[in-house]
Length: 274
Image (cartoon, rainbow, N blue to C red):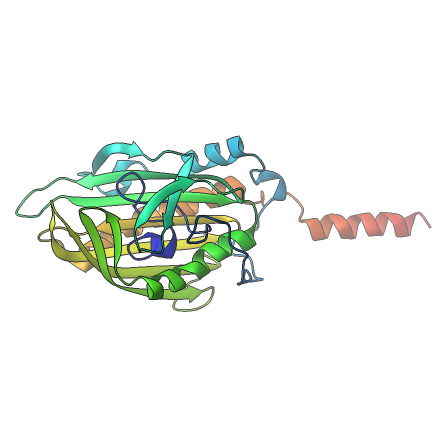
């Protein structure tokens, strides 16, 4: 999400503020992709394992999203725990996030919200994880591409009437850049978070990656006593785990011949028959 908001896309904005992915234009319409996916694949995807219906996409998402303990033994569910799967967040012209119906190019999306309760002089840390399944990799790529536009257009964004993210800045990394060998695209959005309950400003982080037609993101809204480094530590394992779970769900079985191998075998058979 934009560092605050889904890194320009989906943030822990869900029911705790906007949440969802950014493939929808600022007016809630679907924008045409302007960026093209990286040709090299980070996952050897089996086409027959990709979800082609909303139901299949929703089931895959539930297998990829982390449970509270992924964020640490002290993490618990927040209420509401899951966002409305029929809606996602859209950043308006007024830089305020609002929930809109899912656009047609999104098969499914879901956000889960977590919290590290206040303890030892530290305030409650709010965390989230979101997975979105687009119909094509190009549409997922647009979600990432729109992040920079939103950050420049709205360096200050309102999640809810009592929650603000300010001083937003994005750090994008395509495959092969800045150590990104795990996704076609990766981006981190950083900023400051302020709310009526948590005070502030506190560190804010949104991390998002794209693998094929999927975007995976985690976020942290800081609180009293939490450093930016501690927020990164809390997000690292859940984000890695989500990518691992997605790979297991869509990756080709190593024992299964690739499409190229099948094509070569078919060609050889034809040649033998002549």
